Length: 152
Image (tube, rainbow, N blue to C red; front, side):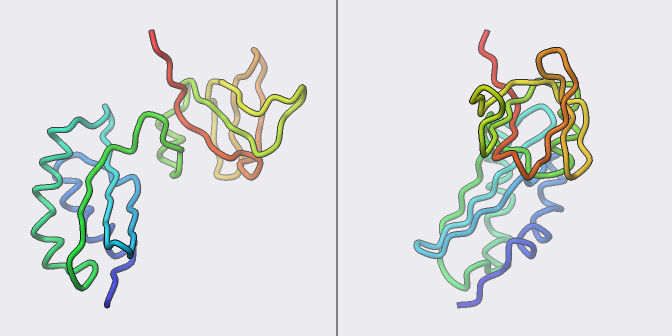
């Protein structure tokens, strides 16, 4: 079987996603059973109608693109509210917003998860406002950063 790489799939799908204002956040491929899952989002969040439009738009072109060289299952999904930041754009669009940080190892007093306000990002570190103080944390010490989810 001839499998396409995630980079090839992303490059192929980007114009379709752009036409609907969707950002491809992540692409997951599985071989057994053959499954292609595309996670998309928009600036204001993505709804089921938009996901369905995207699925319908890419379904036939992907068959012609021949991702797996055979039959496969196509899933198009939201990345979820608590998705991890993966790209510089994720960090940049969340500057000034509340985030949750999960560390690999506990900080002082055994704390492993904090909520803070993202102040900056430089590719290697994040600067946050935590307990009314500016703090800098190396990304290498962080297991996951995502938006803080608050229920009113």
